[in-house]
Amino acid sequence: MKNKLKNYFVTNSNQISEYTVQVLTEMVSQKTVNVPKGNLSEHPYLSIPGGESAVVEIVKRELEKLGIKYEVFESVKGRANILATFGGEGTSLLVASHMDVVPAGDGWNSDPFAAFVKDGFIFGRGVLDNKGPLAATLACLKAFKESGIQLKGKFILGAIANEEFREPGEEDPGLEYLLNNHFLKPTYAIIPDIGENMKKIDIAEKGRLQIKVTAHGKQAHGSTPDRGVNAISLMSEFLVKMKKFKMKYRAHKYLKSPTFNIGIIKGGQVSNIVPALCEVTLDIRSLPGQTAQGIVKELKTLSRGIKGKFEFKIEGCSLPHEVNPDNILVKLIQANSKNILGQTPKPIGMGGGTFAKGFNQAGIPAVGFGPGDDTAFHVANEYVEVKQLVQFAHLIGAIAIDLLN
Ligand SMILES: [Zn+2]
Image (cartoon, rainbow, N blue to C red):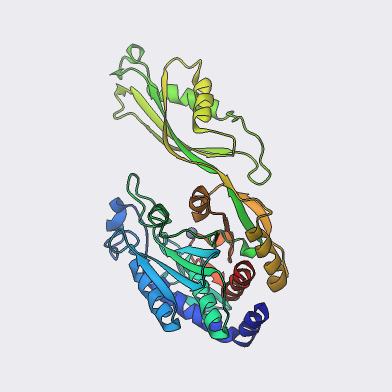
């Protein structure tokens, strides 16, 4: 069966690569830019954030041409998801890509939404993050169909909304909606959203904590600062201490050490008032074994000795996760990569989060693995090598044959 697939990719390489480029170019032309609702006016072509249904329509049309079953799930109008299935029942492998993109930003040498190919590379917003892998997954389904591959288990293509930005306090119309309602429950998942040119497998991701620190001082007239307690001064003492802040943790083979970033600072209203409040928001990337409460306790200890009141509030918390490097999914990615690309990808840990986290938290082993340079994400002149997209299509097909037959 794997030979059949290989022969198909060898014989039809031009046709598959043209197909991938054509579908991808069309997807890129749909400006599925995901921004906070408050920033919509900066993007006159957007009526809602994302608008992923436009890409769903393209995927749907291609699936219909191929005669592949699919279902569309929509909780927010215009922000649909589409799941396509190929094969039988039982064990299933999902390859899930997101359809939204980040804004184009500045510095492009061409129209970001008019993709073009030059010297074997395709350029445009989303060609890598994440529409390229989605087009490649469609190409894989096309290869299954046209080469007469049959699967006992089920291969699932997932095109999912809302990955790049999450409106605080609102329900997620993408992955969370699909998982919480049990529309999607694969046995395994591959998330092609890390780059690394198929040389690495993301098996572990750090947790993410957002903690708001508030320094409480006492308001007074700016001309009599001695009558007040300046909250900005209190916070500055705290921030100096933060420079030497060392969290307690057990080093992790793949995730190494936790990190923190001082991301936001707010304080004061006018210059002739001694400010009573100063707030800082920290972004902490945590390791297995660390807890939100434990980290808050360490921060409290750090604030001791500063003459003022400090308050710590956990504003967001997602836990770290890891997939065993001996998991069959990891092993099959490695074996097939060696076979097809001549390289064995290495397991790694990441500080950022992908869809893999949501799946792992739902008890589904999911790893990050995909084409492209990791430095080509979210930048001007985003690019990916067309050959890598085709190799990825072949690779996920071969992995599916091993895992599902
Ligand atoms: Zn992405």
